[in-house]
Length: 368
Image (cartoon, rainbow, N blue to C red; front, side, top):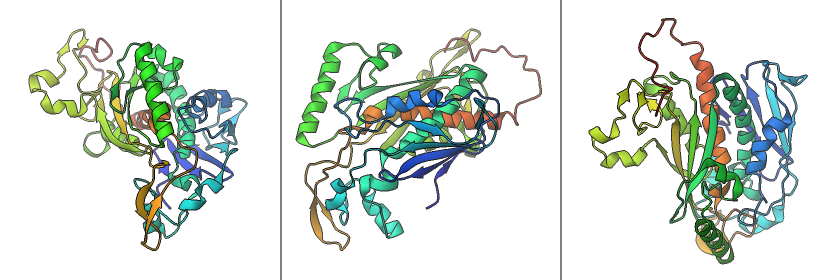
């Protein structure tokens, strides 16, 4: 199985299975000299890990990261950084009833058809558990970008099923299990009751996640095939269960006129950010804004018709421990993927920066 490495200069090779002994990744291309400890990575892993509330899978994993290589005396050496996260709470017997059948909406069928074999234990390689190494690698990228450019990443859930979540302040995302940027008690109570009802019914729901990168340097990305927005969309679609990506106004641009959509430039900055911080595939210096649509979890207790490996009709019920909404834990994953893209492009851009003095006003970092 190929296709397990992401990036060009800053690369992440992901390995492991949901119910194997461990999962992890090898990060290659990180510049030397970055102060790095396991604690720098653990913070984001703790935000993503399972079992943190009753609304997510109750699989109890500490997701403790081990740095096996690439760091000496607390600093990166420029050599590959191997990160390991041991699986501690597998319950493979929960998947015995679906080992020869396919969950509707899941990767089961496609894996079987492509490879002729699949690991049914927790989904094997198709499990969202494999996003943990991505978050670990993203934490390294976040730290380097913050030190080099002051870039910071923020994310929140803006919709759960049909329930919109109004944005109040980024600070609120740490105060509730939904990463909702609101302190509105009525909204949070509705989210809680909706998830409780779904869990009791054995069903699932989708979500919308917003992620923002602030203080992004101007000039990341290339025209045509290596556009920054194209690589961001590619990265976001690589997250389990993501079925849609918007950058800036996204599909909202369909109903906008040109006089509304184009962000005017003034001596003091941009007016508006419909472009989502990217113009012509290149970062403009404004905030990069991304929205993703996360589909409902495919592993649910509700019986559904399917087929087995012999093509015979069966009824499928999944009894393992699953997130009724995988979107609840998707915020740190989306932040990590955006950080990986920007890190890779920042390193690529160092070899392509212009040697000329720009005499036009530097408006990119003002306003917007």
